[in-house]
Length: 229
Ligand SMILES: [Zn+2]
Image (cartoon, rainbow, N blue to C red; front, side, top):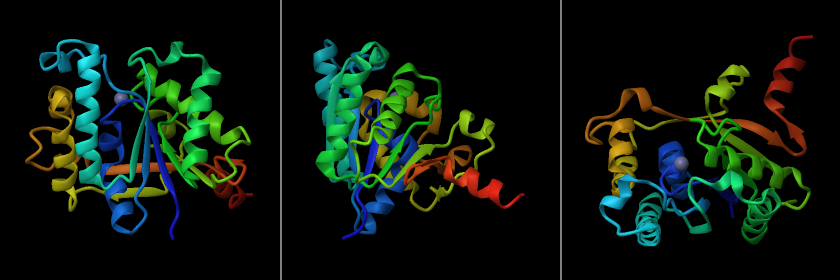
């Protein structure tokens, strides 16, 4: 039995955007990850072309997520069902508790989430990043050994190098299929990844930096510093 990997994000499709190929690779290696989403993505205006209201959109996006999860080989998807776009208004302790429960229930050993800038500055992304870090540091998740953050402007400013780099070119058809599964999001997806037929060179890498390991924050940076007395 390999490691238990847990991905923790804000919206259905975050998992595919940032880590579709990493997830599929872990699944192929016999370590299918679990996924926690803080919202069901019910605030997206573009989805309301296809759904009458937020409730219907939430159900639709949950179904799309289930299809993407099958394509990526995700073992279980859980939704905290907090309101999309308002995650920073949720009581922080309650949000953290939801993350802790998920980690405990699945005995997650390796956690992946957004960096503290949320990658693109989205307030929901920032909120779930903070809650995930707080959960890992809380002492209530002894199963966790490593916490990785998706590469982002914040990470680059800190001068931190990713320790996981996935070249998505050879697996592009799989990632494209998972992106297509998030049908309601086609406008954002096409803006980010193009037509999904041609490989988007500028989106080649899925990259994660090690943010915490066995009680040490930014362990890689410390390693680098210790090599330069
Ligand atoms: Zn998102």
